[in-house]
Length: 455
Ligand code: UD1
Ligand code: UDP
Image (cartoon, rainbow, N blue to C red; front, side, top):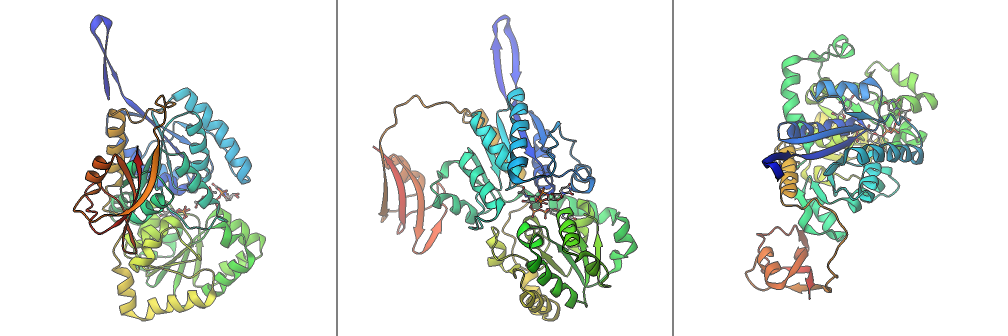
């Protein structure tokens, strides 16, 4: 908040304005805690929905379940090719931003909304805060990898779930100064809403009809990644495994993309007719959280669900060959099985039959924080605003020369002290083979560092 004293002694209070751009189910879920946190403070906010997801069960229901207001704008882009969808989003977002002139734009994750929002805002010189920045699958065939990398290039503030993701950004040469390790807002949403869901119970009619409340051996399945569901061989291999997992009650809230492609490939009816597989419509957030928390196993290609599984202590098998959430695998709560029938079956059966193995997966520690990410994010934005750090303008100082160096440090000196003493910015710190995030307090004695030095 800024207080401005105009002539005639009129006190004008200027509040910061934050614009949040979202467009799909996971963005609504992960931005909800931030929207809620902003609404508790003296900050103006607008929420812009691109309309990429538009079915009630992919969009509107989440605003209700997560108790956040309907968006101020919806530009209704709908479905389409990447170019058309992103182009239409850019046009609509630009009109709103020109009109609203926010102090910062927030985008979340790696969808086309993130790409469109980041490109438009950066050209308008509006700072961008990228929520869930720094994730990398290193697979450029994924549209999401292109989107998240492009958004990171355009951003001014990076809200990063884990140290590993922060290191990805450092390794790409991003300055450590604007990186904030906050945890993931999915944990905030999960902790808050699981309690509400447990109190309320299942409301979805299909789940009630199936008596999921008293069901055992639940396997919750979700899949929607283009590289799986648009590929007949991959999806057939996955279905082959599902057919053989007949000891499980497989609950499959089906994503509209997946429903379309399974029908196109002529696989939908066969799957729907299997007794142990229950295909249901996409579920609301509360029903879905309750379902996953009661599950013995999660089989998914979703990004958010890999995070929720480890948050809810449910073993996950991920139907992908790589993941931008490697922390879940390292921690032991998630195993990558690709679309390989044997790998899915072997690991699923191990979780079902080897109690020790299943316990180890359940007890994997959650790398995504304590559930206070939204607070940390909004604190950091307020701090930047109050210190004038959200103003983007063309530089007026003639650039001083700087050199990029590597050196071994043999003194008891922290990163902050080193930077002050050398007029330098430390980018990377290696402790032997291990790369560390250079916090101000980190002692550099014995470490190899890379830094920029202003001359
Ligand atoms: C998008 C995101 C993906 C994210 C996912 C979350 C991109 C590039 N992809 O993928 O990163 O993980 O959302 O679920 O941004 N459809 C409907 N109703 C809807 C929405 C979609 O029927 O409300 C159908 C349409 O046929 C559409 C298809 O689903 O063509 C795919 O939708 P789209 O938004 O393009 O991609 P997602 O697969 O949902
Ligand atoms: N989800 C939901 N209902 C469902 C399936 C998923 O509420 O029927 C939630 C889930 O809890 C998670 C998010 O949707 O938070 C994940 O969205 P999705 O898998 O579509 O996208 P991704 O995370 O892969 O981008």
